[in-house]
Image (tube, rainbow, N blue to C red; front, side, top):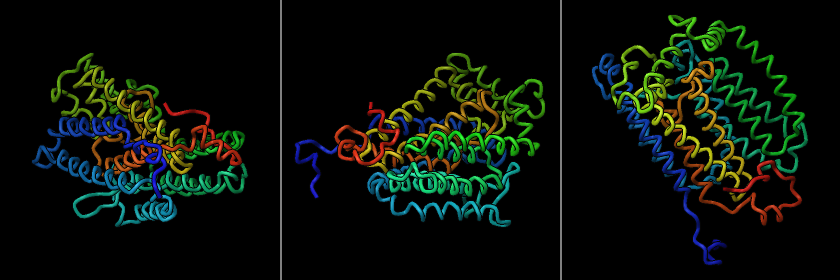
Length: 397
């Protein structure tokens, strides 16, 4: 079938160049900062100062290839695989809990060790959950306001995933999935009373999960007053704040940071933004925040301009996933949130996280080049019989 845009003398749009450059700017900055933050530690522990950089560069290459593949295939190819992907994500979360299969580190069992690498099933589960929700909400557009069809099944799937994540335990990813569910159901037009009710019901469950876990309570205490616990439970946050604060406006200079010299734990993973603040200063920190703002802006733009409901929900969910991960990591590094253990998308060291983030970026780019659009006035008129999603209240920028 010929493209209607060509018949009208219009060229088919390509992927969003602003989004593309923002993503690769973050990846490039991440490679530089991973080396800067890890070289001394890598030399001391492995004898190779480039150890973490080499692994991160390999993940960036694989992730870029995956991004290109997704972009060439198109996001619509994912729709028929929504349920198999979800089952694969569930299987990964189950396998990581099996002794001898899952690997424990830092008090949590979150990795499956593979020859020469490790894999974090939670990253696949989050991506699979977004694809499942987008596909399911597209199919149930006319029934999303029916409790037993449009609300309860999605909550049940989310509950199973969150339950498995809490067994690892992975509280940060659990919260991310819950917020994804809330955001996408709201966007699809679910009743506000159901969403508010589920949120109120989840609050005591979340509090019990925190109160019954000594290490989570310690994180809350460290967040409330890190300086009172400077030498024990508040050590990471205090060192992170010192790192960011010492950078000033322009930073100490690339590679000149001091907190990475065995003072700040996880400097190249969870707290890489602290090293950016120390070495590149307020200017570097503002650049990073600005790049994430661009990713969120262009992701939402892709959602509003998507050609179909699946693309709109998928773009919105992926944007929320990337934006939430960035906000939580930045908030933890600056002491605005309790420690969660979520990496900084595209920047932190972690092969699974980087590859998953680049696949998500590839899907956003694929949706951005398939503008049609589902949420534009003409398309809404053609779909007047279908209840409007809340995404349709806005227009693309």
